[in-house]
Image (cartoon, rainbow, N blue to C red; front, top):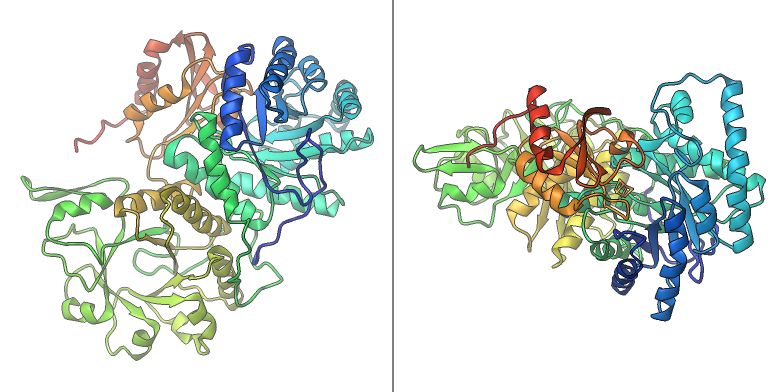
Length: 635
Ligand code: SF4
């Protein structure tokens, strides 16, 4: 957890491209075309391969799609493409057994493969539980035998939202339940002498997904297993939010040294997932030379459960408060209040009044730069110490000290003082009594390449020493690539926040606007579920089962509902895995037939098979009935 090294797994043969062991981390994605449309599926596969996709997954919901994999494979081969194909199976052993003879790998979901769900809470006696496992073993055995005979690999793909009733009855929908679900199928495969396995533990909630993979690895190590891992965050959504969620989940685990293949699930055309996956992996291709000064062998925090570090409250930081957001305006022209709309404060000259958006930064750092207009009353301002001295009687103004300044300062703020400290300065600090000063918050900056593990090492030290001052995570990035900045910062901040560390976040990149930084920081906090500031969309990436245009529909729903802070809306192409697939969505908009939508409140169906044209209005009506609707703001 403190310095990067990759967990070595067993090599698994997948056609001509093995994964695990010393092989590079492989990139994969899934087609969104109808599997019966051979030409469209082949064309999309070629686009994906040309973008850098190394394995292509294709849905095979029934026997006819499984059979058509032969035609797809043949046509790809005629065109000179020999990419390993993976058949995505959900329920049907018949389809799996056909596909396993054709493609290089099959993916099964142990939550619903053979084990039909009743979506009911059923209490199982030990005997009933074991009898069901025996029944599954009997029905699963032919597939394993075929895989052995044909040299086909298998992914045991556990999904948080579709655990079996049996697993739910004993473990609930927890990371523990996810691990047990995989172990049952691993053990059946091992009993049959079959080890060509890859395992995944997906969830749309990065926190659950991270904890489940870590628990799986810890359990596998305990049992002497080392099966390779396929990493992914399901239903991550589209655009910036989908990328942030994926980076928090996948990036954190890659930084742990876990993962042999990744799939970034975006509600976009699959070829757009590939560059994101490449950028996530790229950090681990080069050796990070600047490793932390100190390592701790004992992990002083729980890496399997979320628990926020205890800190004392200082002004808006720490205690039980949400992590705060700081944005840097020190190099801006501060002549006109309209500039604050970049960070969520919209000024109306007519009313001489600010309106505050849900995504509005808590603190602005002005450095030595004094604004020439009145600021919103709720916006806290940070100034360099010397500049602060000249305006110290103004409300909402607080000093940012260097360590030297702080130690010598004759005057401090009675409410809030921030000390900027690099990780090197932290370790060099012999007398750490300033970390015990009242009304003080540390802005901790890592200047290392391995920023996150550098910071995590200090987190460990703070816990061991019982220092309870609030800490702001501060990183500066120099990349010219906006997307790389988004992915790197989401990983570097997200991993620590999920560890329980960080009472505030302050990101900088010279090439990115303050508006982007503000949105990104709130996005990371939302993805880690530590600060909810907007509507969350749990939308599937779509596949050959999709019953409507998912990208267009997601945009349409987003346009009408994106002001509903804190509401989670699941948008799913089909209900293949049941409503649980939408994880903890408050409302679900799910394809249930051609031109038909079924609407859910939580996991309960409220409107069945309504026409697509009316579906969004009906969804809004349900939100209204629940008193969760508010009219969009007039900005
Ligand atoms: S929920 Fe979406 S990605 Fe999953 S099977 Fe249905 S259409 Fe395909």
